[in-house]
Length: 148
Image (cartoon, rainbow, N blue to C red; front, side):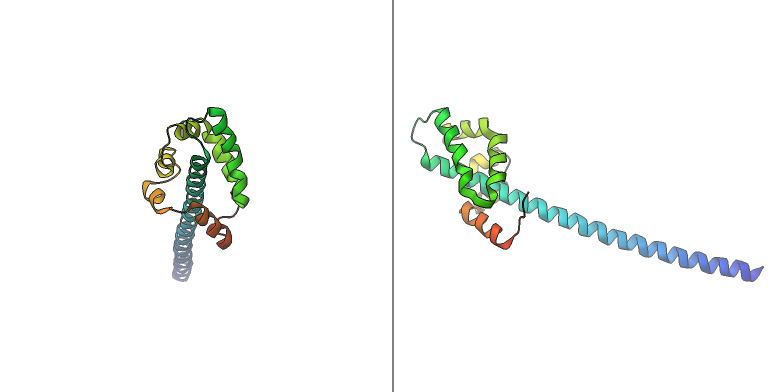
């Protein structure tokens, strides 16, 4: 009887060690997944910020004073074709924010202020992104951001 109890305790101890090992492994996996998701979110947010800064800045340079809503919308339709691999993301951004972008461009808001107002850039990110087109080119070359 003692040998049965002893072997049962030994089996239980091995089982508990395996369960603890499994739990520790799962914690590491969860941390890795969380870090990966955060990194991809940050990359997507940076792309969105760069697209916004470029689009607003380019349109402001192309617009004449007192541009009509129709002229602004035409420029917004054109700007994304300049962004190559980021054209789809740009089109989506423009479509989702068209009324606000028209208003921002009519009010001649600076790109960094406009993109923070649209909640696409953080205030720190918008100030540090002086050359959004170069940022997008670098991201495309280093493949920091793949697709969506």
